[in-house]
Figure 1: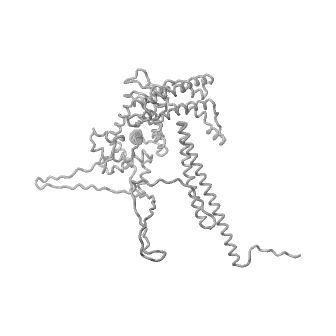
Figure 2 (figure 1 turned 180 degrees about the horizontal axis):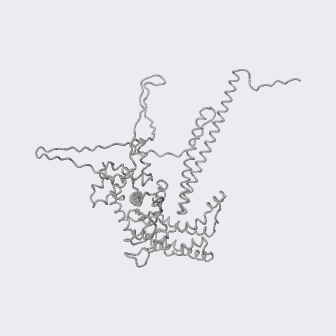
Figure 3 (figure 1 turned 60 degrees about the vertical axis):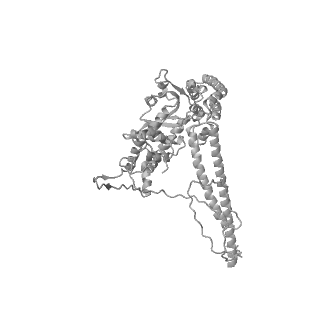
Length: 545
């Protein structure tokens, strides 16, 4: 039998093999570069889509009014997702550039990036001049003249610098009477203290503004070469809070002179014997900006161990006016007809009312639960129509936000009053068709039982139709709960109320809380009591040192 010789596809010549290998390597590099370009293009497209989805979600939220806390969490999740997608796109872009550099035929994919704004002018500039050549690299001549320069700016950060300030107090002895004199010791917020005002401000703001517990701050300080125990830092926090109490009282007095307040509360876990109890933080917000009021906004926090109605009655004992709040029963006695020192009028929150219907009409959430093979609740056409009717009122309110009370009242009488009349008739007719125990009936009854409170905005241009001002002020507490988990004691909860009041009020007045606290802590000891108002966030002017 004749065996056929196997023919090799590779040449026997070494040079030919090298050429074949070089061609194959070039083809592999080209393929790798094209694949990297495709991945980079896909990542860039994904980033653009995620960015547009986030913009659409934000615009929808602005257009259709405030929604549930779940929607805010969803937007936060989309922000985090966009961060990762953008990072992936940048990484794939770099990979594509490296892969394209190995080839002569494939051009690296260039992702379109947003135009970066110039760096702020107030940042200090450090010039690093690259040495110029001493002679012409082309001809070797040394007759060079400067035509100009190109400047490339790079943003850099210098690690936090710690320093110890030594205040020297010289002693002098009188030759005549032999009496010794010495200048007084520098002021510290903490008696016999050692911490400067900027350090204390950072400590307070990190704990109550950025939700970093003291033990985590102590760990970071130790890594930076400054070991400080948690108990030592806690001493500074307690004494600094005591020093700031006069400003808390001034803000409290300012809030209690308002004719209209937003009120709300949220849970805060507090340590108990072998467990945690559910305590409460209450907030009362004065914000006259929606009706172009001249008085500055402020937020006042209080702490209580429970949610009994006696707490808001105590907080608002000397106050009378319009209270915008949810339907919490503890406010009931405040609305009594013969209340002293004056009447408190209830103004309903349409955002709370809308939320009850929205949960029954949330098509997106139902589809999501169905895709996860979970039980999806029913979507009710009545709930959808209720949301649409309420959204029409929100559209009017967005258009008149910031106008004077008189202008707001006139437009409401013209546009909102007919919609409210139709809404009442429609809710009454739908309620009659439903079982009393139905979720829709409960949502409708929530509004009908408080109809006077919900329609009070039609007769007063100062009233808002939502209680979102209080909910925004309280948002810092749920954010903080995820970091510090619970308060260590009732005193800790009261201290948190004081610092939240100061920080949130500064934020409402567009003041940097940490810079304000640092300046206040440096000045408050020498400030006469009749000048303390100058340290309030809406009056404060930083002192030049």
